[in-house]
Image 1: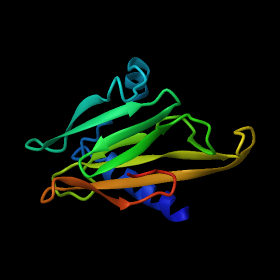
Image 2 (image 1 turned 180 degrees about the horizontal axis):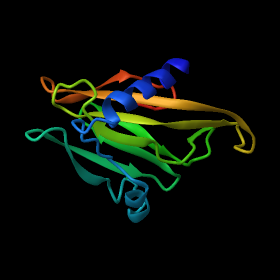
Image 3 (image 1 turned 90 degrees about the vertical axis):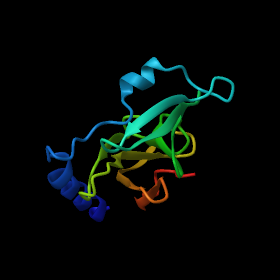
Image 4 (image 1 turned 45 degrees about the horizontal axis):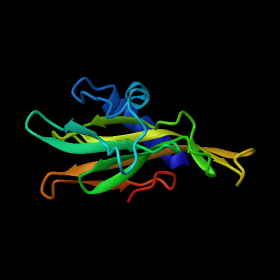
Length: 157
């Protein structure tokens, strides 16, 4: 957990504060509240993620009626929204999420961070709060996102 905190601090100083990084959120609470809860019948909301001036990729997001949300990226489906009380949720529901060029290669990568809240099986007693940091680097040769900094609290399918 200390490693995640140090890495997040380093990313903030090097990437998020850099005017060259041009960080931008992928998904906001306003978008989530405006969209209907998805299921197989209604389908996901389509997104276009701009990774550089020349590279955009298609993605989609869906939120279930139970309160789980998945961002479907090339190469990975990522749980970044969770209000469903099933032992682990995210403190604000939605993890902070930004596209930012963290390594200076000219392509934005996906950074997720926030707080996971673990509860008992009934969802009535909080057991632990822990920091979450998860990074997906875009590989232009394979045209996919690769989970380079995994988190046990962020499910990747």
